[in-house]
Image (cartoon, rainbow, N blue to C red; front, side, top):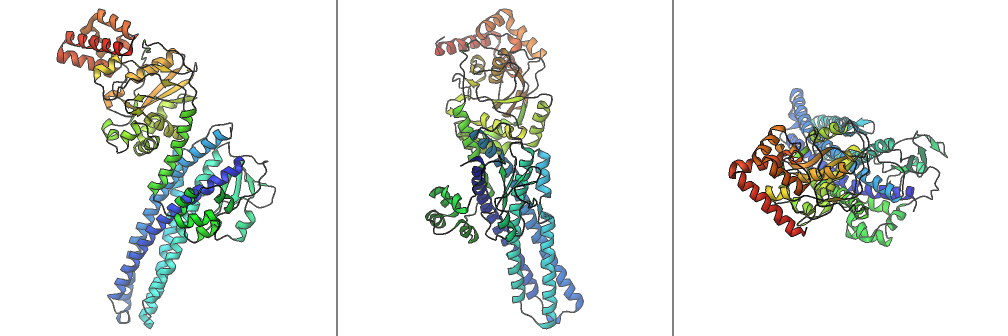
Length: 590
């Protein structure tokens, strides 16, 4: 299958998953409509309609309108919240999907994320049949009230039964389902169109109507047709139109990567043949999945008969996490490490007004997360999900400011080997930043030895230098990424490795850390106090052992030593550092 056929196959799979979420949204909206009907009917039963004068009748209608306003307010708020989440989740999925497709088919060019402001605009102003979501919900509410108003007035005048009101709500339920169905397609289409428009890898659009169980003539005629990025038809005369083209429309626009490539069409049966039985059963349930697999029903029949198993937004996001983690896992497995035979003597750079670390959160919030231990111990999917929970706009804005003066920056996560397994949090954090800023991740520079600083005390962290291997590109700029900053020693060692090899470190960001740990560059008062307490001879011994003098310590490292001197005295601190160093060297065999 060529890249355009693969794109359609993947689009259909994603569309079906989004339809499953759409079902759960529709189910929740219909529950609110049922409660609305119960309150309206209760209001009507409390009165003898034929005995009401005009003023009392208008007061009753006012009360009914208030009930409608309340419940449609809940429906609108619920769907709007879902819309905001779907826009973000669909964008995340597109970034990872297009990145993986680009790598698989060796496309030339980077994947660009949508700006944050554009995502906010899509969340607030995406159109459903020419109306914003708020306008569409308001229109349904007004339409329902107008029908109820006529029904109640006629009932008061002619003694009509309350079955008329039940029929009104039955029709309204069908309209609400149409709204949610069309809404889901509109949101997905808007995000895909905006994303494809800014990505040079995408050369055009193809109309796909495979899932359209309510196919109209306009969708049938357009199936498979292509338009270029300027919306000009390729090989036909149909003007460009972005689905949905009618209520309940399931058509979508698929990305086209080669306008000249042959396209032999795709059907629902083609998509089914590309799925395994477990995959079909996961999406459609055991019975319908089996019938699809056996060819007893068509894909359109399965969709039209409400055969899809609904999913929550959290479950939909788990699919995105799985896609992201699979892609990351492949990249980490295929990374190429060039061993530089780095010596055990530490390498650190002068601080030179180095910026503070940008922290996402304080350490206690992250380490208390239910997924933290799994992510720290090697579960990549858990790491991706955890990072998503803790990203915040304030820290992302600070990272943006840090990166603004620089071009061609690479994201360099710290690949640390922890006692319980390989820590995946830095890689997962880098993956989210790759999405946010459109910067490539450097996978070829890694920690070379097992240090095990997690859980270590301050002295143990001080004497355990970290070695790194991998090729550093001279003149290349890097943003260092870690899951946590405590004393900052690992970051300082990695920065020294990069800059001693000709690279440039523009800054650091970490998921968690205490505010005072964010300052890496040692301050003059702290350095002066340390040198005065320990003396020149001990600093000379330190430089001989670690390869750098006190000026290249981090602020937290130096403050820790000063604090211990105040608590235990200079001699005790000197003895402890020497003993811990000898113990470390003895264990390492050098």
